Length: 319
Image 1 (tube, rainbow, N blue to C red):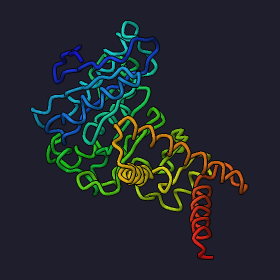
Image 2: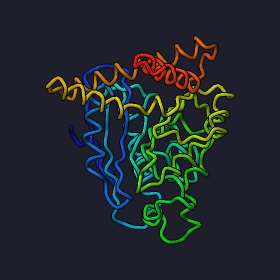
Image 3: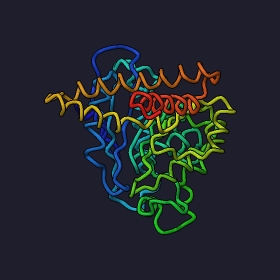
């Protein structure tokens, strides 16, 4: 890794991917409630992306002078513009630059994704196209300044003024200008309530902004009405009983490993998990097709699950 850019209110560090051309790039913003930048949400994540061929960067944005206002936003804006300016020499495709983050850092990434087109948020003369992110990855994001706010983040950004805090509330800033955005959150997050993501992931807003795929990352948090809306509007919706099964599968792998007195490496476990998850998807997809419900992954997952239970009961002579 190496520092590539020192900004007025932050430092951008580069984690190079293997040599190549037209690589995607990702600028990561660690969380920390706008009080600090978490170490665990920076370098370890960037290294993992770099190993997979993504040119990765970590932005340590200054959190000392409160209220922070738009300083973190301008710091991220300058970082994206710098990466795009140097894309050719770094082997990066200038139209494949994404921003991402965790918690408050995800709020920062989402803020640029939502406002990049609006000159009122940036210094006079800013080249808006230069800092435009092509995608966003928001991990358990701070989103709303409303009832489910992570209040400390908004106080650090805007002070105690409620109206000024609402200015930074992401669910009010979503528009057709926002790039494709991948969000994930866990249902039991005790720091940033999952409602932050649900607010931003309002089904109608997702559909209106071109969302094509939704995979639940918690224990089926999507309402029946939202699920139906996704399906009626052509969004591929994978329910949590399938998409969120990784934890159960790893537990099964652990039991197998213990029973056979083996010791698998992280890479071996990860490879087995990927194989199982791919197999699960194909099983769900094939089952939906078999029962005349092609593309309905909810139906496919339900039927596949019922069939597996029925087969087990028959094998045990229960019926």
